[in-house]
Image (tube, rainbow over all chains, first blue to last red; front, side):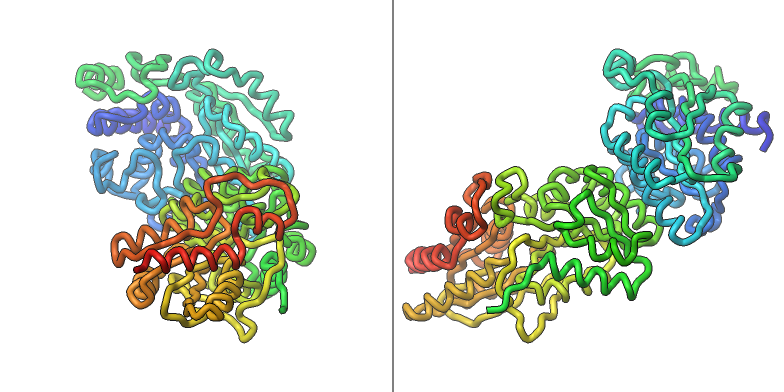
Length: 273
Length: 312
């Protein structure tokens, strides 16, 4: 898909995200919107996968370590045809397949359950180790929040990926600078983030997480790179709530659903009304 | 009396199973010489992952390996495998019902001289409370072999506790472990001693002493703590009218609690729990500690006499 097509797809994804969280009356608006362009890039351009065959062994894997961005993942899966988009409006309801955080046993296309922060990179490493034993060349993508980098297990896993030369692991940090309690730098500073990952033995690239011209080449290199002996991390500078100015850059919308008025304003801004 | 170490059997059987099944992988957190995964590591270095002193990452990594179709065996000391990594076990393994086998060594207080930090009287409770989890404590090394076979053949998360200390063989004629089934290792009619792990041999010794006093004690090996054999437990209460539980674990949350939970709902009879009474461990030799915490056949005998007095 060309960049223009990706931008249009991301716009539709944002509309889905806002509508489903509004309908559920709860959910993580800010961090789902900040990840929408990255998710679009993964599911519509970068990853090799077969919506009609979710367990295809050759598929690239994706682990949403920042599981609270589930609305973005569910939107991507529905838009790719893993399930009917109408089901998006069942988000967070009793007996819905779309749980508040991803549940691999319920949702077609979800590769790993997540939600408790800090655990996804370890899981991605394990998948990559297992695939390598089978000579399977598939890549393993994992998306972390920036606040999530405060979890100690992330750095245990960062060591593991480098130690075992898991070159097929590509981590994406959705670096929107905000977490529930405020700015990441005020709650618990994580900078210098790029240097941290670099010192743990990773290839690091920092990109504008809303510019497909930068995102796509950065994400594709994990499969194009000839020598896969180092894991890669893409630090994506993003804006929390991106696409709907009422939510942009505001920590208080980390875990708050749009009101009726906010939804309307946001849809208008996204050209949907 | 033949002595066998359950962790030693684990190391040997893991190696044997690894020869037959290429999907078996093993992970350890810098304790492979103690948990005995070192045997597997030496033979199959490409299928062994030493994650270093990082039990949480090890647990998550095992989940990922299971997602890639492997059968990961994860080992560390029981306190770290169950406690340090508890939430990873819950979220990454049990919730998605992944095929990960946690085989944790150094369970209980028989770790000995290392003291409370490395002992655990909480691990069985911590694991038992998690949905989807199967929790097993072998009564001897022979049963451990059978348990390992079952674990490989049965999909889903397992927690299997082994011990540092070698203890007597119960099943010299072979064991056939079954998930969800207890095993009557000695018949009796006056009371039932339900035990797991090394306390099964203590319970058998206690039954001998009780027999000399004219008391007929049934002894049940409840190696499968979860799913637990509700029918057998209720049946023993009905048939013998009194129950003593025996475990190298806290009386809170482990076998005693599980038995009491079932009997209170099915067939209430007097129950007495032999176990660690809500205390941390301490340094000492294993036999000294078993004595100090009241985990010997003598303690089972007095518990039996006490419970019989209440039986009326």
